[in-house]
Image 1 (cartoon, rainbow, N blue to C red):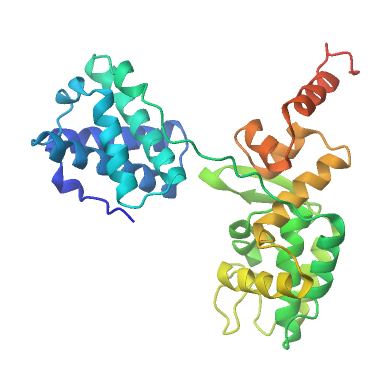
Image 2: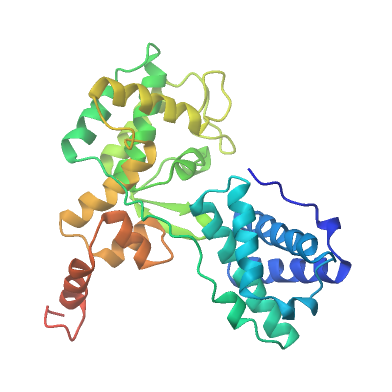
Length: 316
């Protein structure tokens, strides 16, 4: 894994420019703290490389001489350091975004350098579980631990992932202040964006069953889901439970907790759900992401749009 150079390795003017850009990304585009930290590492890695490559610290005005060869050399060095094609594609995307902003700010044209193509990243289509596999998995979870309250806990978490399309971090981030759930739940997702998720009675009942058995009292400021010793439940424990169960059921390695969120979206679409509504339920910023999530091909997407659009002939 490549190391992120310290900000002090940059000239003060460049360090100030990076911090200004990150501030704009965080405020204007509502990027999460995690995303901003990743962007910072990406850009600092590039600027550190360019400084070493040209033998002098990178300066805002000096980057006007960047060429495609500089971008290619950086990409080659990153791959040699072991960065995967997917991670490199993300890193180059952040670098291009920063350089576009900086060139606009400085008044020079970097379009030739930024036209360098990134690595080809194979599209990893998600593999949702089918309905029978999902039903078998949730039934097994109810009896898959010697401690009844832990079995009930795992069942409740997995039911929320499948029944409400939550990310595992969102499910484990629920606190006593969220309980009882009611007909819908306000979820704070990536980038701090909030969405309302309908609560299925079966999911609420699974959580109620767990809370009835849980030996730790529920307090407003405490997480709903607890570890064996009473601390917050870690995602790794749910992942381990899934590994055990998929071995017992003969499911593929793609049967992860996150696959239940994929399954939620795919099964909802198959039942006639509207793709735009599913996008809102999942908290996706882009409809294209939802399209990939649900495995919808372009022809099916056109059909959905035609049927839903007021002038598409599919009704009002």
